[in-house]
Image (cartoon, rainbow, N blue to C red; front, side, top):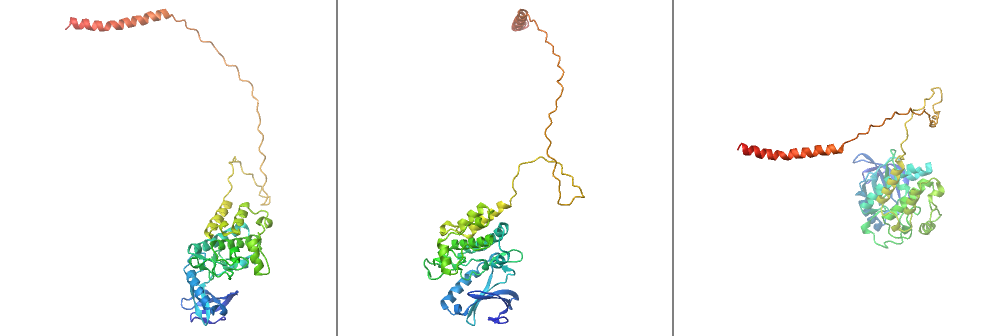
Length: 362
């Protein structure tokens, strides 16, 4: 296939977007729906394998069922002139690998939002029962408005169809980014995608891969047995919490990692949110803003005057307060007793008077 060819009597190939080990990608025009699409055409030697054709169809159907803002949508797939192809939405922008080569290191503030989006897309696929199997920055597309979209679920397989020991002679994924269990030829799991995401994050922050070798066999050995250098050896000011997260992601045992990309995404989102929250400071006294001389350069702001020391004022002793003694009251307690007794006797005669009055005036 070449530019200008008509694929499946529907897709007009416009320009080549890149060539990989398994396929070539074109920007094309869907003549039926009149829209731009991206088409991946597999190499002829892969397309001629009937077993591979069937597996490709199954994987393409599974990928076509994924609908998420952070996943490239699959529109169509088929076979034309002996070559398998898959039609996807065309995403303007570039891939993350090209950005790393151009920019070098990403800051923590730049890398975390990108990784959270990648985890959102791949985590959605995990919930749908799919493993990407080939997570790498080449398959993470970045649009001009900083939206990330995961592409190339072509080698992903439904979890329900993976059997332990299935195709142990096949190494899944790219050697620089695959997990230790993939290096052993074992079937990948969601934790395998988590490991690959950790390699991508490591490369974004440090500008280099944790493992480098000239052969796939040596890379496999390093993934299985060798521990990568810590982030702190490249970034002295890296947050310790991020170092702990990265160490967990790159654990050799799948059970020691985050189980799915969703779980990793939540951890990274929480880490990014905590870093963005303003530090809580104790209340301070409000003081008048310093006056700025308009003739001074704008970057010059005079320091506020130091807080004055407290002044201890002395005052004369107060005048003495005049005092007087209350006159003593001499009480004749005997007379008081007689008066109280007289009141009681007088009160006791009242009933007798009432009885006499009633007897005299019946």
